[in-house]
Image 1 (tube, helix red, strand yellow):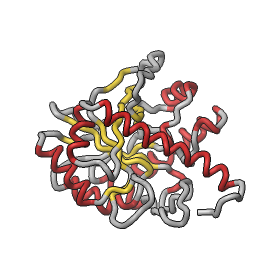
Image 2 (cartoon, helix red, strand yellow):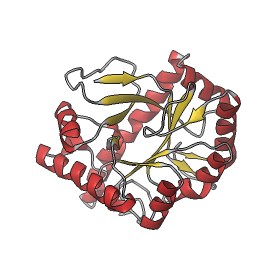
Image 3 (cartoon, rainbow, N blue to C red):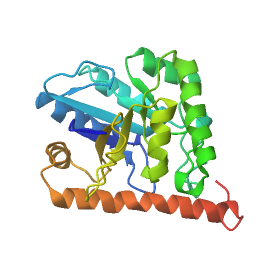
Image 4 (cartoon, rainbow, N blue to C red):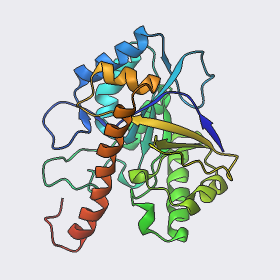
Length: 261
């Protein structure tokens, strides 16, 4: 297992308007982040590109339509490529896997839109099929989820899907071996405060990511890229840990104790 040192940023939604939470970033702020990276000489690439001397991965989780509408044009201006992690069972659908409370509804990319991103040189990667927390599934169910996502996205784009990030960043130890077995090569994980290397799976490339939220300024982006602030990492992991509450609340919702999304 090789830990890649390429600076990597994680976004979710690039869009206008109000939303509860910190994952939606206004396009004007996103533009400032991209312009900063470009002026610093960074080149945003995919895992399938030849690595430049000063490279960065810009990734997007969940596969939202607003990434195509708002992030793609901004990144095209500086010839940046992105990596988007798609939950294949939600292609063209509303994000009902999430707790919306009727406010945070967002549409996922359609098949045609995924193909458009792929045709523009973006990497289409897997975020699983059902966006289930793998801690709640049997190993056979996880295997099926991983394979189904890979097959659907490969059939859609005509390109091999080799990159993966797990829903909610939940990765039981048993999953690592499955990832290699079904054909994934690059595994993106949230950078932790502690070392959690799984060295026994040497054929996987591990890319540690830094999460970006609407409260992050261009200065925060620079700290994430340079890995220069322990406080920034603590803040990130604290906010990111709240995403696991979705797993808990969704379970309550499914028991009909909360209004359905």
